[in-house]
Image (cartoon, one colour):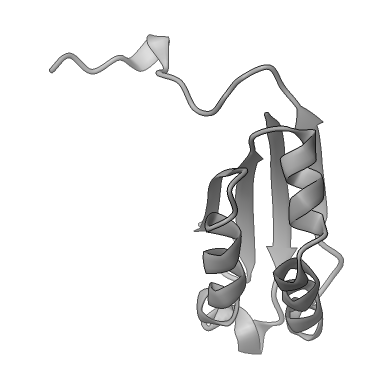
Length: 108
């Protein structure tokens, strides 16, 4: 699985509309065959910062994502909204998605 985590810092005037403005890109990415998850979170410490956690089935699915028209359009539409260059973690890991956390198991 390819795991990607990206921190985006929006200009203050775009922070409250960030998720709306990235909505089409998010929906199109989630519809990709090789996408496992594509989840946004807003920082509790910096209201202008959003963290995107992405998972793709494998390197081929990640490469296919970067080659899509909606990826290119998404970057183009996000660029003027940004206060600074995004920060990224990108790694290839042996997992196939999320698994249960053994240290905090809930009994049902």
